[in-house]
Length: 300
Image (tube, rainbow, N blue to C red; front, side, top):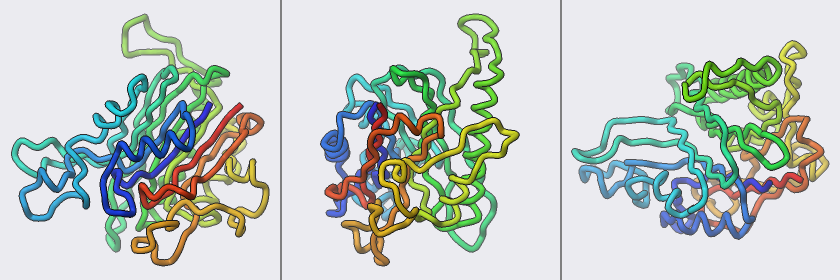
């Protein structure tokens, strides 16, 4: 099972050009992936559909990047996780959506869209955040794949969001231990069984070793009955959390937005019951198709 995770910055490369086909091509260069988890996917934020006041995201995003990804990935199921939902920029335009997506060619069971906490922090700009979860049949068992993108400006919000991810994990494990039966076939009251095995990936906007990262890998409470999260990078590259041998995931090619230099803030976290299956975890340093670098996780 090969997974690629990438903050694609709505397909905007370091050359300023928005190009989703390039994103898909670069991800495929990294691996013949079974699962693609992406953050910063846009619908309706296209400057060309705005009212001429400069509104929208730089580069011209196209009308619907979720649909465009589906068109670029035949044979894959594309799941949407909308975090931001705003009114249209102009008459006749779609509502403006911004969030995450999971694309997979593997069988998908249930899907959840978890709105993450957004406590008030009036000193900085911020936006709503989401964790998109899909139970995927890896061929060697079910795995909960969760992709997210935590708040950039507010540490208060980031820490609240990590805490929510841990609560979501504990809840999923509780369903694994004590599943509820389905009511009857064909109704929304489906069976609630979920595996304890989970992968959480995305842009944490927290450097390796910083507060949100450290909270994510803190031991789960014994009462939760949930396996701890482990940093997949350290499983395959033993060493310090933030040592000089750790590959950066942003600021590698974009020195304007990341003037302080490269650092790792995108991660694959796996539950301890998946640790023995982790074969590779790599960061591609070549691509300049976004301001972040794509990551690869491979499970036996």
